[in-house]
Each structure stands twice: as C-alpha cells, then as structure tokens.
Image (cartoon, rainbow, N blue to C red; front, side, top):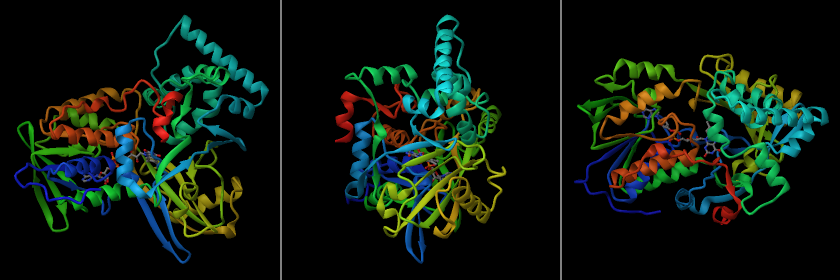
Length: 492
Ligand SMILES: Cc1cc2nc3c(=O)[nH]c(=O)nc-3n(C[C@H](O)[C@H](O)[C@H](O)COP(=O)(O)OP(=O)(O)OC[C@H]3O[C@@H](n4cnc5c(N)ncnc54)[C@H](O)[C@@H]3O)c2cc1C
C-alpha cells in the first residue's frame, strides 16, 4: 500500500458518506490518486455490514463477521484491488456448504443428483415430472414472471421450489414468495437451470459451468480487515475518516450539493465539498435533502423496505461443530436461517485449536417477534436449537454468546419495487455532483464485489472517466458461476 503525500489543497474535495466497503473503496482510489477526500461515518467503526467484531474472553479472543463474508468476483480489476489491499493477510478457503433439510444434508448450491437422492424416488420422480411440465407450459403458453414464486417455479418446477426454496426464502424475507419480485431470483441464478445442470453432468464440456466459490479468498483475521486496511491507506495518504459523524442533511444549492450537515460530539457542522458520493441507504438519502425532495420521491422512499438481521455469536470449547463453510437451515421450527463456523474459514478467528464458534443468522424486521427478543433470549434460543433440535453441541461445551443487530441489511425487492426505486434514482441523477453507490446506497442486492465496483467507478468518474454505475451487477450470467475455460484466471 502507498504511504504517500498529503493531497494538494487546491484540488476540490470529495465527501464520501459511509465507511462501508463501497465508500472506503471510493476514498481509497481517490487517495491513491492524490485527490482530497473526507469520509463521514455514523458508526464508531469502519466496515459497515462487512466488519469483523472482536470479543475478548477468559479463553482468549474470538472474532466474528456479521455473517461470514467470502470474497468472490469475476472482475479481475476488483480481484487485484482486493489482493492489493489484503496483501499478506490473504487466505484461500475451500467451500463446502449444505442445506439441512428434514434431518438430511443436501449440497448447496443445489446439485440435482444429490437433491433428488435426498428426497427419495417418489418425490424425485414428481420433481422431474413437474419440471418437464413447466418447461412445456413455457413453450406452449409462456406467462410473465412477476413474483419470486413464478421465477423459482419457472427454473426448478413446483416440487423443487416447495422443497428447497419456499421456506428458506420466506425466512430470509419475512414475506411470501408470491409478494416478492422475481428480480432477485433472476439476479442470483442467471444462466442456471436444471437443463444446464443435467447437460453439464452428462456431457462435460469446455464451457462447463463451475461454481466460482468452490474456493474463495478471505482475510486471515476476518473480512473486516479489508475495510480496516483501506481505511489505513486513506489516512496514510493524508485524508480523513470522521467516525461518529452521521449525515443529517444534504444541503443543496440549486441542482448541486453544497455540503453535508453532520451531527458530531461537538454539535452540528456543515462540511462543504465539490463532489459527493453516498453509500447511505437510498431511502434515507432522499429524505434528508434540504430543500426537501418532492413529495412523490419521499412517498417512493417510504414504500420501499429493507430486511434486518441479528447475528448470534456463539463460542464453544470444542474443536469443531461441522465441516461446512455455511449451513442453511430450512426447517420452519428453527428460528434462524443460516450459520457459519469462522474457524473453517481461518483458524485465527478462535483463540486455539480446542475452541470453535458459530455465527448464527436470524433474518428479521425491526420490531417483529425476533427483533423484540433480548440478547439473553436470543442466546438461550440458539443454544436450545443447537443442543436439542440439531444435536450439534453439548450444553457443557458452550462458553457463551452475544448478539449483534444490523438494520437495513437486505434491500427487499417486493412486487412493484422498480417504479418507486426509479423515481428516487431519477431525482438523485438530477443533482449534478452527487453519486450513489453500494448496497443500501443503490438499493441493490450487491455483494461486496459489486458494492466496491460502484465505489471504484464513482471515484473514476471524479478523476475524469465516464462510467454508468447502473451497469454494475447487470451481467447476463449468474455471478457465482464462471465457464471452466476462464477459471484459471480466477484461482491463480
Ligand atoms: C449476513 C450478510 C452476509 C453477507 N455475506 C457476504 C459475502 O459472503 N460476500 C460478499 O461479498 N458480501 C456479503 N454481504 C454483502 C456485504 O455486506 C455488502 O455488499 C457490503 O457491506 C456493502 O457495502 P456498502 O459500503 O455498500 O454498505 P454498508 O456495509 O452497509 O456500509 C454503509 C455505511 O454507511 C454508514 N451510514 C449509514 N447511514 C449513514 C449516515 N446518515 N451518515 C453517515 N454514515 C452512514 C453505515 O454506518 C455503514 O458503515 C453480506 C451481507 C450480509 C448482511
């Protein structure tokens, strides 16, 4: 990383809102180019949803991501950036993920042969029949895909949808699949279908679909190191990151931003700049404009929702719980949806070989029955599920646990979300010197790679290039797969 000079004071400053990976990436790129940039962040730490939390105990230090974050991308420029930042802390991790389904384990992502074996011959025959039926219907009488339910049934048929997608999706989103937009499925499973899976299983070809994330990169001391190291570099290049400084107002002067009003420990202050990049949730951004955005834009923001998450971080005196990278738990009687075992990602996440930990993800909405549970109730509920329902641990192996709450973790694509979203985006595009980036910032289900890509391109726009940020994460192929012939460039 560059340990450089202070940026020229005559260059106009860029103000970056939010110190998650997207905002930090913008400031990292600008800082390396010698451009003044100030990052303003509401929280007392950097990393946003992609941070790593440390917990000191009598047994030593445990580290937890907000749900395990793996690095994967098909974009070599982003891969190089990640490697440059994480540098000598980089690990390669082999991925094994499974679905826990009806007391059995099924590979994730869904592998056809394995899934059909797990459901038994009668259900497997029904699944194949249903799949044939839906494909025939699509040919003879194609219907429009509107909801998530339509999209899953179109891709997998009714039986596999009901078995493997319906319960889990409803756990994640807290809504019925018929109320959610098909866009999420199309964005996540582009190019994947039973036909491709069968074809690729029977006739391995040069262009065989492989999962990009059979192996992935991970920083030794947790994913949060990616953000922390970008922050170090930004500061070393003479730029500032103002923590505990939430943006309260975006002060406009005509169709330009003049400055952002910050609430700091010393009081309110106006930070002026020439260019502005926002990674704060889009639905919040349009509501803090001064003068205020038109009422239809505010109404649009009010009509869109995010899903929240609580992670329960459990510590054990036990060498291992599972071999999995992730385990997806579809069972409706178990309140959490997924967990990962950090030690399987990096041994440095636990204090020693005799210890392990789990990060358990409870998808929820602020104020609902899960959100309303206390820290203690959440830990007790988790122990009960792990000990009694899943039989993964013994009560005496539990050292302790604690929960972390993150709001606005998942932008929810409900049916009809596009219209209000476009309204908000059109309004922001009318402001000359303001760009929106990131996951919540774009209201797009972006992983870290796509989030930082928007941050990178926004910075390049300020440095004189021209990029359309709306093209990010709009590829025609599912972003977790890559054709075999390209793989060498990914894993090298
Ligand atoms: C459970 C879970 C698992 C995930 N797993 C993966 C994974 O395996 N791989 C992967 O690549 N991605 C994963 N992601 C996605 C990843 O977390 C996001 O893509 C990434 O964090 C988005 O970065 P961002 O900077 O856009 O947003 P965020 O990380 O949300 O950062 C936004 C920042 O803005 C700040 N902010 C908000 N409002 C204000 C304000 N008014 N003023 C100032 N600051 C403000 C916030 O405090 C925050 O720090 C996962 C996400 C979740 C929730």
